[in-house]
Length: 163
Image 1 (cartoon, rainbow, N blue to C red):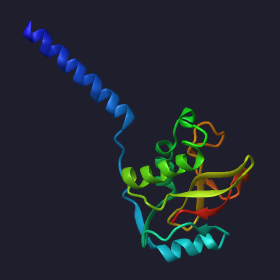
Image 2 (cartoon, rainbow, N blue to C red; image 1 turned 30 degrees about the vertical axis):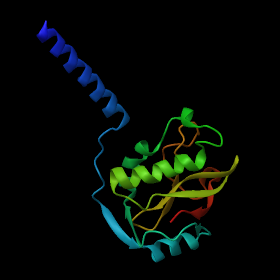
Image 3 (spheres, rainbow, N blue to C red; image 1 turned 120 degrees about the horizontal axis):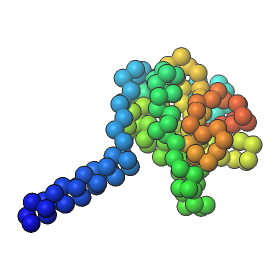
């Protein structure tokens, strides 16, 4: 009887662990990082018409396009998370920004705001180690979600970055 109860408790713990690993998958942090001064980072964005929303970190970590592509699937969240005026586009972007920094060590992935074909919108933007600026749609319900694109592609034109 005691053995059966212990086996049941072990199975319940295994199920909890499986649920935890599903919600919080283990990912490999980025090791191909470059630190860039905030001023230089923002100057690159200013050159393409994107202004800063805040004065925060003095340095930002950026990485290669290869690493950004590896991170991309982990920065996209189910469309059914959307709740108008509660958890909407900028919240998806903030979540992706936080996960990029926390899970991968790349705090240069930031919330971006700008115009898209459907109106004003929040998503994430970053710069790679070569100075190229990219955007990513973190809401899986959008056609272009989960891939880094050049500024302007598919009508995404950011004008603000939270950096």
